[in-house]
Image 1 (cartoon, helix red, strand yellow):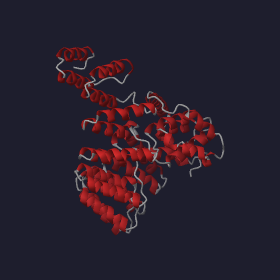
Image 2 (cartoon, rainbow, N blue to C red):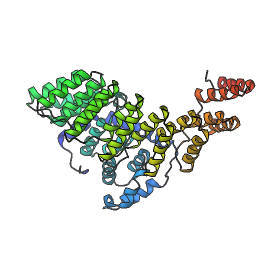
Image 3 (tube, one colour):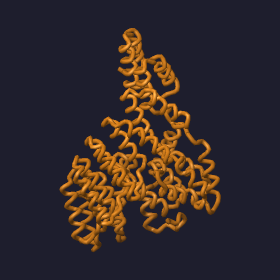
Image 4 (tube, rainbow, N blue to C red):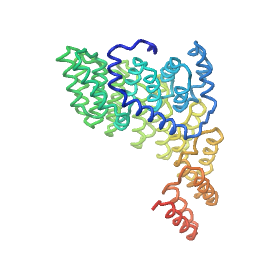
Length: 451
């Protein structure tokens, strides 16, 4: 594990000063504040969790605390963000940042990375900050996230400075730059860096280098070139890992080639490479989308037999697919199973099952789940989709007066109604032959500048 208080090397200092010079400090601080405000705008379902964990972190042996392990399922990124900001000891906050990132199902969001980076740079702990910076870049899921942090252009400048400084870059430096470019689909630029690795620095690319290139081609929708890179790495004696296979499986599924994706899944298992939950979830989703729910269920069972346990994304994909293909009863059974297994449903999970129940005419059950969410302190106050589902269910049940009461509450405390909200209510009134009230709602839309 990284030693958070390790003395920064010259390269670390040069890298961070270039990356986070005086003109960047203010940007990071202001962005962290904005992110904090955003995250704290939602109601906190576990208000005392932050103070409880901060107290636990006061013990030097906190990593062995069974109480802390028991709190993992309750943790959300906004809790971790607050701990990073408020815990008095930076070393403990950093160790906790790394520790919790290895606990499933928890996953940092961008605000956690930026807050941790902001604190480390503020305290001039440049070595750990550089490490967090690399993790942040790797965690970026798309071009927009990279743009938001202005990392791409800055990283390219730092990369150029390193090359011009006479310092020999490590393969990690090259791989990081290649990965950034490939996530943006700039594979040709990444290939130029690969040439530099081989020709100028006499280094051999590793599995991370090749896998980044595979990712870049898949992002560009060019599976032919992605498999050419795969063949090239195998011929070079570099064994693909689970990430390589998962990337290709995802690429095949995105192209609708789910059977080939399943063949690749079988191949990696035969080679002794363990698929991750993500590896399974992608083809399960594709099978559901292809109206092949029974095969999706079979794959779901297979993953459990191999010791790979589904996460909330797997359950959500399967629940959605089963519901859409007329197997709502099985979907409801899965929903109850994930609750029984102690998993924490996401808002997407709830919205999926609620929407399918209402579409199937099971209004009472859909509303029961919503009321269950409220009783268990799930944050639905800011979720417009959940509110729209409630209004739709109430209108279909003929309880439009209750739907209007909810609209009145939304106008006062949020979330702000959208066009879908009003359209649902207008249709509710029209279906009951109440044209006057439907017209009044249209006037209300005019007043609130929805038109």
